[in-house]
Length: 406
Image (tube, rainbow, N blue to C red; front, side, top):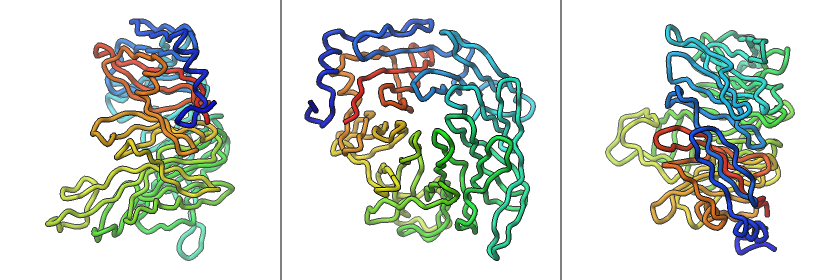
């Protein structure tokens, strides 16, 4: 039966407390023996890796790739059979080179970008994406433009790549998508232009739904002129994009897109109000300017059916969402508690939330690491993935938990 938090975890917790959990923190990659329903796996990164690394996980919670772009070369490792295998090296010591941006769910397709062009690596095949696309001008005429492109992401099935395209003769950019063998499609076409730029999007599992953001330039609260790298979130589906409604907070906020569910049903992000501090009069302002007063970071979830809903918990003063599972039933995030400490959380569509520290304590999960953080939840919501540090050695971390879906 559901517990006091409204989640079906009672029988899972009983099983876990009886059987316990296994912690793996050895110097070499070792898979945790499955005992009960919870386990921890710590996988050290390659010995020669730098601090500028990013682990990439598949939707089922498996470690698939490691991107290392902190040295003279940009390196891509694949994690196969408990071993790291170097699968690609990009020389960047002389000129800026292609760096990895994203990969398909099985790791077979990797997107690389040097912020001028985008390559898609599929085994021995390398596809350089086109750099031409169209937009509709203010007079309704379709214009073909040429410019630079940078990668954003790739759908889980590897068939759709998202990009940002900047026109050679303009400082603004468009949000674009590419499918196998096709031309670039401008999914931000028809949206307000002027000085607004649109970012590369986040695709769902099959690329049918793409969420993307746009910059902000204008007045907000008591600021007459503010430049910001994010201001609105958009969702494109069936050839049309719609704006995600802003949170109704009683003041103006900037919306920042964070993730899209695998089924494309929901997108999540953060919102924050910005004000000019008393005595600060130099405008226009940017997000890096002195004299800005920032409101609390709020989180939200948007669906076509329900619109924008705030993600809240009485335990938190600020909440930042970072990931959402495939069916949009569980959101992963972190935030500042009302007592000034920080913790990660799981938030459920019924409005309930759960602190990871409390969940781990209940499940008798211990993580033998100096520090760790989670930035992704698996499709089914039973694995939390991220980075950890053990004795100054960077690790990937995967924690398996029970199915907590209400």
